[in-house]
Image (cartoon, rainbow, N blue to C red; front, side, top):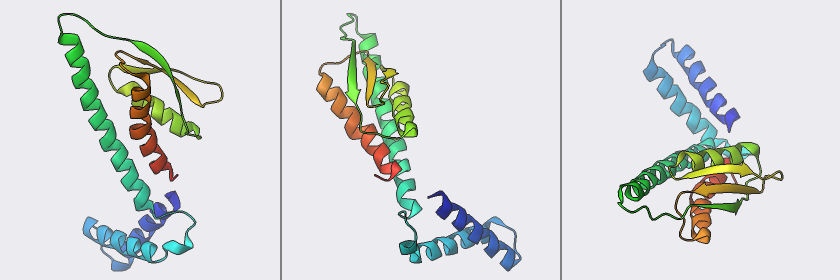
Length: 159
């Protein structure tokens, strides 16, 4: 992916210098030309076209902001109730992620959403231990994380 982005950037710079016009519009035209060239030659690259992973990263960002908003609202509703009726829980969530950056990203996204925090990662990096401020059903909480964050991270990593 990085090679394709750098190649596209290089083609745009070459286009700028060949056009003898060093402005943003010429760079954008060169970038579009570079993208078309890379798109036409995509079968010669071992990885998918880089826009697929960029789109997946954009979707992961949208998922995070959605979960952040929903978590803020649910924590707010828990806090403003006169009687604090919460079920805090620590649970173990098995993960299918393999790379360190994937596990770190998942842990960060979980921790950044209000009401949850990753306490520990197992030594074999297959289990995350998560504390949640309110959990009705552990399986539902695990499925929610797996079907949102973990699935989106897999798409970003190309799996």
